[in-house]
Image (cartoon, rainbow, N blue to C red; front, side, top):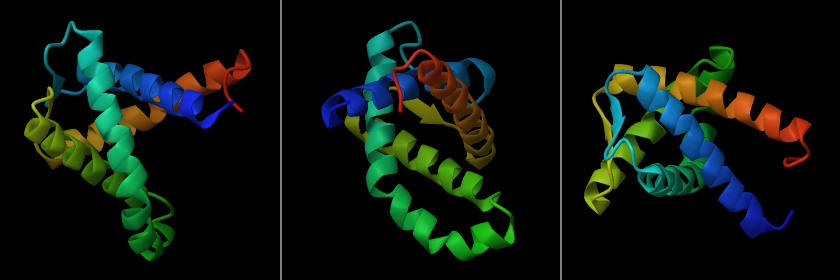
Length: 128
């Protein structure tokens, strides 16, 4: 798969996972909630934040992540979700994250949802 197609598929998978997060986690919302493009735009912001800031935070937090047997990675993902929410607000997009606890639960649900979606896409041959 080419890089651009993989990037677009990553945005779609993230948008679907974000849709589930907004339905399950109180305190994480995308407005308007019935507009699929709102989820696509917010997912693009989240993917870009994750691509640029994620490796830095995961690298800096690697010792703590090892000591906590990987649990600190969820804290980093929650921070990335909060940054995406802040940047979404600055850009006038619809992601709102109400506090760290909502971001932490949202990051956990997002990780599980993304894993399940990638598992399904992999079984039909759309992911490597």
